[in-house]
Length: 556
Image (cartoon, rainbow, N blue to C red; front, side, top):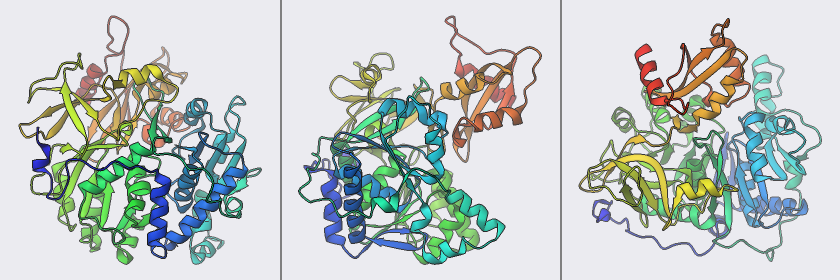
């Protein structure tokens, strides 16, 4: 099928694959952009020259701690300048970046650390104690603590020291005192790494990115420099109107999410852009930034586009500068497209991806050929096919439902320490089984109609029902539980739970919610709890989540 006939004019059917690593890509940006602004954080800016210098110094600091080629280095940080520096410093040594959500609980972090066995961690100081709460069998050689305030403008740092209750509360959220760690500023105190130090190759592993699975335990997707760099080049080809050294990116999506990594940490640097960093999505911060330095490239999830569009109209703050806008990680409603385009300066298109594809595989063209409601066409140098749900060797006829398979340079090489799941997901011939059920129209535009997997996608984050159920069933009042996703116009889906209590117990939603919050990241905690007498199960005793979902829909 000739997909490229529907591409935006100038978008090639194939890209030239990278021959060097992400390290060389970043060094090229530093050499060419020099005094141009690379990063902005709460108004404080970092030039490309300074960014390159800090990367080299941090790399030398890590080398002196014993980090070498192939070592895993864990990163537990929100979006901040230190995160960008840490990412490329680790890669410079030929080591492997392992990203983690800094808001994860100690329990959630445990499985990942057991799996990747990183001995060095670069962590937000607020998250350090969660790492130390790990049992003794997870040994860490070094914890490098990061105080976000060191990258704040001086005026803001001084203001946060004022003895006012609200400012003290803000400071407590941003930083805390920790002992027996290496401070990030000490890591940067070293001389730059010698240029002769060996560099990684394009086929070396760059990252392990964890993604939830239906088993409830996150799996580490192995992504090479080639995978991630290729995806950034595919994005550059797909968005030809994005100019080098002339765009402002708003990095609202977290760097620890595959979409955020590729769009900002890689693609943003590739385009030598001015990247405005937000440690979390805060509408007031975004609107304040837009007054001074409005975005031109804006990639986010539907709820963020909605919130900003509404605020833009209400506060009369223009987003007409935003000409290249892409949504991903969850379904994009037509109403969101119309709302956003009423305040922006360009079209909002939907892309499709998964962590195992670095992550983007399909997208709607930035052109009149786009088809809202679909996830578009394969990216350049990307192949897709739709196969029988039960037999991936059989392709279905056009217009019929089937599982989407993807093949391309961005497709991962497997799961870390998990050959069984790798074999189930990475099929013969290099085809990636997406687990999504799709339909292709006569022109090849693809629509997601169902999911073979039972993951819940809420605000762009994957939630494994089994993981949440295990937490719920560890509560003394809960005999059984089933967790499903229910439609939500703001987040795509919301996590809800059907609860069977033990005899003599009653459902206490406040207590159960607090119990979950202590053990799960906030987005995984069920928004609603429904008491039920029993759960529908198969003859083998497996909970039939589709029937649970239907029953909860009736109750709602």
